[in-house]
Image (cartoon, rainbow, N blue to C red; front, top):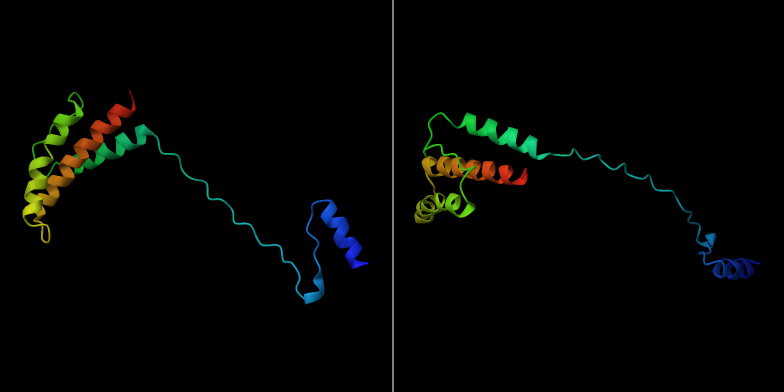
Length: 117
């Protein structure tokens, strides 16, 4: 009887569940997919602008407007900072860290302006 049921299930392309082992199937609870917030370019631009304004106090580097410059000119501002960082990578000074953050924010500002074009 079970063999016939198994053969019929195989013909239909289904798996035949034989519960002789005392085990039974439990329907697993499906996890709800978390709805991801969509982040727009405008949101990134606003956040970068806020961070730049917050770093205006005690700046290590001069505030530059990178929006009209090409990317290779912008990246050249980061080269001397990286050179200073490489001199003592184990204990970078606060000034180097602050300068790196400031220039990185400038690069992010340039990147987000390119994303809107």
